Length: 216
Ligand code: URA
Image (cartoon, rainbow, N blue to C red; front, side, top):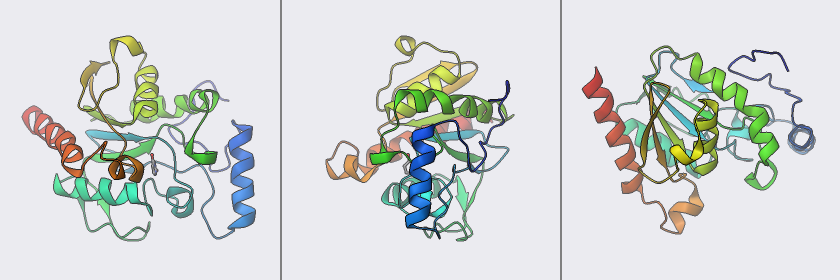
């Protein structure tokens, strides 16, 4: 790995052998899918960064855009539109014309993991890209982390200690000059089980919108 990695890994990143092998198997089974390290999506002048877990197999791994093509994206992009972070409409495809405004979406782990579960070494191997992604956003003020893995990796990427910045839905903390707000992940599992309701999710973005408007 280079001493200072860029904000985006190469599509065929080889840092994690298990993830590279899974990508290769998916490419053999579904040659028309993206099947690569999924790049971040959004506005280079973002004031808000959303950090997800990892590409979904039939979502971002298929389409090549974070949260695009699965249920989690329906809720995320709908909520971003409600709070003025996008223009155009989300239609589950990278060519749907959706644009994020003042906002960027990325993942703590850029390659699809088996069973949606990256292991600790994979999360750590991908963290320099997350750190570089954050560092490359000159206007960044707020980060929303979706789920504990994304939250913990973001705190570590910023040099923080987890015990000083614990995950909790709606918990807000400050680190390295940035505000971090954690949320339960907007997965279908979490919404089906009632752990996260669309109203709870909206509450996170309402708070972030208000903070950004207050700061500007
Ligand atoms: N799609 C993504 O890109 N990230 C997630 O965390 C879930 C679905």
